[in-house]
Amino acid sequence: MNKQSIKLSVDAVVFGYEAGKISVLLIKRKFEPFKNHWAIPGGFVLNDESLEEAVERELQEETGITINYLEQLYTFGDPTRDPRGRVVSIAYFGLVRPDAFKLFASTDAAAVEWFNIHELPKLSFDHGAILQKAILRLQAKITYEPIGFELLDNKFPFSDLEKLYTTLLGRDIDRRNFRKRILGLNVLDELDEKLSKGSGRPASLFQFNQKRYFQLKKDGIVFEI
Amino acid sequence: MNKQSIKLSVDAVVFGYEAGKISVLLIKRKFEPFKNHWAIPGGFVLNDESLEEAVERELQEETGITINYLEQLYTFGDPTRDPRGRVVSIAYFGLVRPDAFKLFASTDAAAVEWFNIHELPKLSFDHGAILQKAILRLQAKITYEPIGFELLDNKFPFSDLEKLYTTLLGRDIDRRNFRKRILGLNVLDELDEKLSKGSGRPASLFQFNQKRYFQLKKDGIVFEI
DNA sequence: TTATATTTGTGTAATAAATACGCAAATAAA
DNA sequence: TTTATTTGCGTATTTATTACACAAATATAA
Image 1 (tube, rainbow over the protein chains, first blue to last red):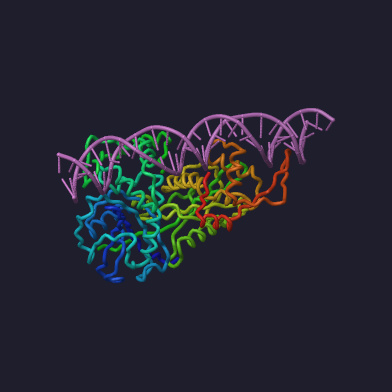
Image 2 (spheres, helix red, strand yellow):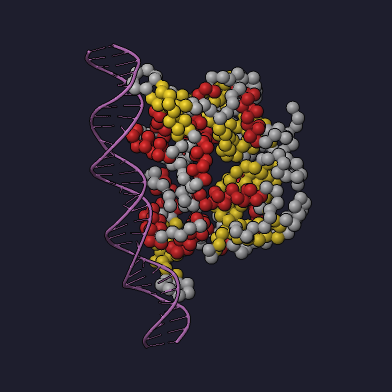
């Protein structure tokens, strides 16, 4: 049997949300192949680190960002996906809060930028397909897991959540029914604080109660929009 | 940077169903480590084959089985999961029809056997965790994708489908409502043939119409139990 | 200061979907 | 020929989803 010579990398599709726009974090590659082309951040796995550690390390090195939520997306293993030879990549799916939005300082990449998911550049390797799969996962998953909160500030007005859902699902949602549904799930705490932004009645701030969610989940209550 | 020395393998959790029992295909390992212990079939990926090809090849070599449905499950990459060194494994999830049930002739394994998922032996490596994840995937997925049919003969009486669902979901289902629901999805063709098995009124045979399902799916109709 | 625009917050009636439920028909076995 | 077993089917009740409008609180403009 021939010696196996397959390289292993991780890639991360990181989403952020602000002002009604879903963005994804891309880097401009510093080296060949695809030098100076846009790509999903990622890189080779070190021998003694876990896959998640590899993702977090690469994100740190290339974008300086710290991630708020991370899950495995899919493993891409087509033998021709990398011109350098056989590279199998385990793709991850990440979410960051708005406050993490600005603070990146790339060292290993020529540039780092947020791109609106509707205005994407052409991507390196099979990263277009990876990104597509991640978008589908995000859209599907917010309807049955409370991951939307991971894209909002810790405290948020209800209208932010509503806007996030209409944006992600790409359709209008009845404001009253949505509020009833979400508050009925009993996983949001209403705070005493109010937030005024511009004109209009000030909004109560809410906070996702993860502990209560896990408890309810254990009891068999399912999050569903 | 140190040279990467990570090996890549695939493993397949293959489920079968017969007479109200869900089984999983296991092999007895022929070599160290875990020699003569039970494990999920799998092995190292060759340099120039896709991941799916690797799975199908290994299944063929170790169990002689040909699979009916295959999808990626999850990639397991804990640095300590294999005593031989760093081995990252991409786990797959497969289903076979009852007629494929008997015909295996192992060459690369000391033994091959179907085990009821409720009477499993202790497994090698982290295969217990992989299998657990596969069972959860199977249980979840039959409620929102028509994969249950992949576990039945091509033509089946309705009661077989009902039994499969009660078994997998682990709870009773109202027979009339279930039938209404499934037939209402309009993805089953009722054949002219009848099947008599033992006593009782003979049952009409049904067939899953995959083409119609894909069409309906494209139109936005969702399969859901 | 007052009027206007903007955003938040809330309840109920109408419609649709899910659930509960029992008996007759067709066959094999006794 | 009687009995046991399995299939096939309809309707009423309950529950969940959807549609829909106006008052309260603030900022801004007049």
